[in-house]
Amino acid sequence: MRKKLFKRFSYLYTGELMSVVMFIVVFFLLNKVYPQLRLYSLTSFWISFFLLEFLLVQGSIYWYAKWKILKKENTTVTPIQVVKRFKNLKKFNIGLIIITMFIFAFDFLKLYPSLPLGSLGIAGFIYIFAILEYINYFHFQLSYDNLSDIKYLLRSKRLKQSCLSRDFDSMV
Image 1: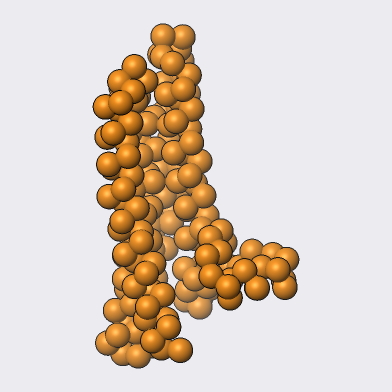
Image 2: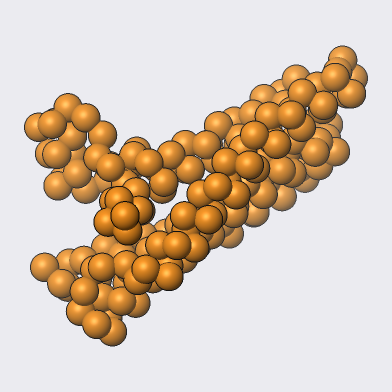
């Protein structure tokens, strides 16, 4: 069981880090191939992209902390200082999510109709993806990528509470 968890935590933290790098490359190439979208001129694109990357880095740090504690102390209990930091990050993330909504409105009012709507659509997609990542880390598990998770979902017919959310509950 320990070996399986160790491998799972490693997969999760490295996967999140690879996503950070991959998204940087994808959006760089998207801007190179479709410069007419003018994505880089949108504040909403940049803040949505920052929010997504910031959340992915948080996820990577969380899973790395779980991996490290399992490796060093043979437990999966997240250290209280790590849980407290993520509790503070949760509030900060909500603030970023709210601010981003206003920035979208600003971009739309300032740049419409000269800006292609596809650009706002791409930025909006990134924003929604970031919100889903936030929910996945801080509230409910949205990613079911192994048989155990899928069986749980089919059996219970409801989403699992995220690991970090369970850590928050155990802190009380």
